Length: 349
Image (cartoon, rainbow, N blue to C red; front, side, top):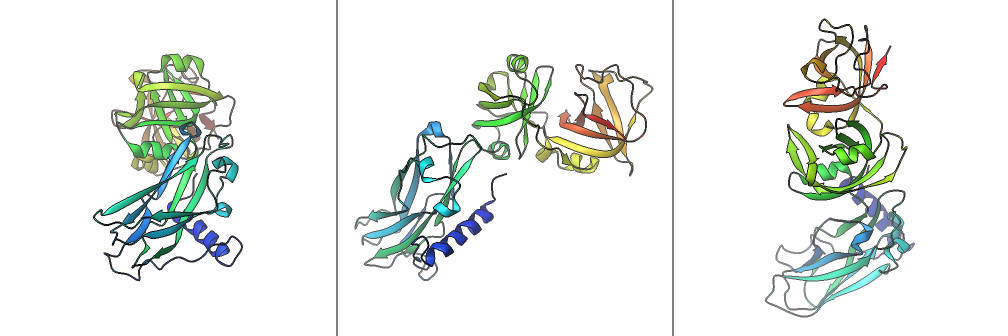
C-alpha cells in the first residue's frame, strides 16, 4: 500500500533534515508563517501528481501567488534519498536542485511556472515508484515566502484500486489488479488496497484465469451499491502475467463485513467460526435464490452465503459445524453476500 500523505511528509521532512546538515546540500527556506496573508508566496499547485510511463512527460506546476511586482526565485529540490524513483526513472531530466524564476510583474494574482519531468523510461516492473520534491530558499527584493503547499509527491505507475474507487462514478481510469474470482461472465479483481468488479465481461472471462494480473481501462459506473466496469465501460484490457498469488484476505467479523461493505466490496475477506443453516437441503444448490444460504456467527449475527451457479460447491454436501469463509464479498440489491465460488472458499474445522 502506498504511504499516506502524513507519512510522505514525514519521510520528506527527514530527508530535508539530512540534507540540511550537508549530506545533500539542502538549505533552509523562508519561514512560511512570518509574513501576512497577502504577502507573495510560492507553492506547488497540488500536493500529488500521478502518471504512468506512457504519459512520457509530467508537469509540476509552481505558482507565485499575489505578486507585488518584484522578481522572485525559488529552489526546487528533488529529494532523491527519500524517493523510490531514481534519477534514471526520471530520465535524468531534472537536477537535484533547480532554480525557478518569476520575472518582475504585477497585475496577475497567480503566475505559474511548469517544470517538466520525463518518466517515459521509468521502470515500474516491481510496482509503483514515488519521487518527492520540495520548494526552498525563496529570494526577492520584496517580501516573499513559501506557501503552505511546499511539498509534492510524483507517483509513477498505476493507481491503487482504493484511489480508483475514490475517483467515483464517471471517472475514466486505468489500473492493474489480480483476478480473484471469475463467475458467470463477471470478474472480481483486487490489489493490495481494494477490490473491483468487472461485470458482464464474457470475452475477458473466457480468456482470463484466477491469479492473472490484469491491466484494465474503463469508465466507472455503479450497480446495486457496487462500483464496476459494465460491458462496454471496460474499454481495454491486457493480461500482464499469470499464476500470481492472490491478495491476502482481510479477517473481519460478519458485522464488520456488513458495516464496512463500501470499503470491502469485491475484496477477499476471511470470516472465522461461522455455521451454515442448510434450509432443509443436504447438498448445496447453485444459482438463483436457491443458492443463497444464511451463515451465523457465535454471537448470532447473520449474513448471506452465496453459491453461484458455476460454484465448485453446487451439488456438494453442506458442511456441518463451524467453518471459515475465505473469498470475495459481494452484494445483490442490498443483500451482502459471502461468495463461495472455489474449492478453497469454505474451510472446514
